[in-house]
Image 1 (cartoon, rainbow, N blue to C red):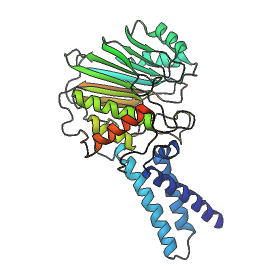
Image 2: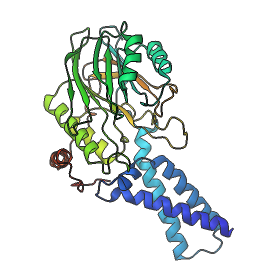
Image 3: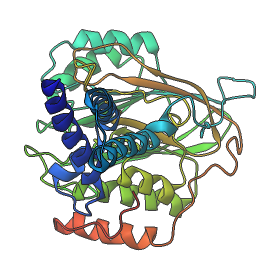
Image 4: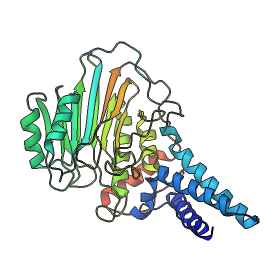
Length: 365
């Protein structure tokens, strides 16, 4: 019984610290990292609460306070990820109109893991799924050679950004790409790809493909650069006011402050809300997974299908999404901006471009 009591103390202390850390308005990796494992913290807190209840025979105010704290923290963490479960209202409308070649669009997003040498697994999956657009990230010259040799007939339109720093990126498309460009919005060695496509029905869609650097002790100490790129793209999407898709390995989870700010700035939909987590990382560890690969879209694109695909030897699972163009398919579901969002975004962007590691202007946990 004493051992279980000690375990309850240890698990409960870790769970409560993990719950409180994201409230701190700093963007250091060791703080922002607690944005990721909210579903794991639910398990830790729930187990701690169960052990605390089981090992108590005589209750006093102290015991009741700890039990209440554990249960409150568990409820809070559940509240944060609940929108990404089938229990919540869907944000992206399901396709209802006839799906035709002129109105349909499919996109596959695939972080291949640069050191992964199983090129054929990626290529075979891409040919099997056969999306209209294929985005690969962490692709260098070796990956470029393998992918081009196998996919050049299927995908005549390409944008190539081979890099050896884990941030290479390639876009393959069956649809002609209008004004494709490679941008380095925040960091000189972290690219993004912008382009525009026209569907068979004449509707244009702006594409933004991102792979910002994550906050970590081995990459970027703070989340400033990542948050700045998300905020900048969100502002650009809203200012243009056009149909858009923003996708890629964003090294962020959908329920974080930065991702929620991005949605409010851009007004784009998240197809996972009301459907599931679709956790894509880490592919090798079932108990340590969260959704890092994202596809956001404007309200004129209705969801046909969203799938997490099979293991390809990478640390990420690929995802594929199919849309049907249906004008105003998700009316009134755009994330409304809050007072201060634009000011916060401008400050975050300024800090990201100057390399400043600073506090967030506002937290809305």
